[in-house]
Length: 270
Image (cartoon, rainbow, N blue to C red; front, side):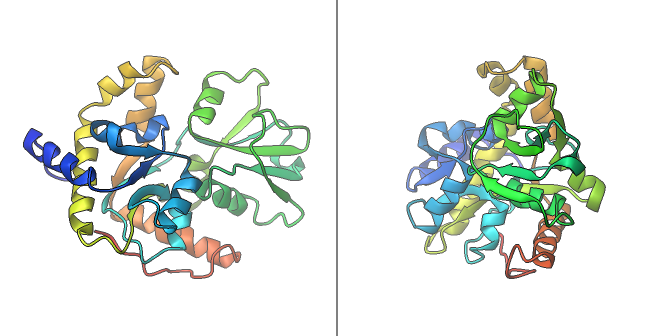
């Protein structure tokens, strides 16, 4: 995201956003993307936001990148994402037993990208049973669980069961050498002023980058040091060419194991 978003521009961006129904998650990692526009955002889980966008109930939404592959006619906002370039801290596979002893993996119904990334992790284990349910973060013997968002951060800071935590951002970077993009802003294709809406969302995100200290001070779920380190060192909010390479690689790998129909969907950015 290049260029500055001035006070005049941010007021104009908010005027544009108020014309539309825009959905975002409430996780700590997304707060810099929406802080200035907090009062105009609809809050929901990632999978629900994707469903709302596809149904036309939302005009723009921060959706799982896996969901975006199924709606390539919905352009994404260039330059903005939720991703990581190594450890992400908030997308985990929690397990007590060693992974090679796991035979059941609980997927999170709030997620799509993280669930499919976990399926790639176990792609050479056809005997694994994948089940969809929000579970306690302490899986039973022989089981593992996908844990995302603030629940994952809480597990990072307080792990009474002393579970092993596999960071999926780390696993992806070690496997591919690329950043991973978990979510993008996507816009309903019927929006006539989609370019203006994309610019407004970029402007709000740029403004949020200047508000990290305030965001950390406003939240009370984590220590200030932990929250600041997470937002500054683990969450990648800029979508650049390497991030787009990561998106393309994720799509291709899903296609290799029949987890998506199109290995290279015709994705567009505004």
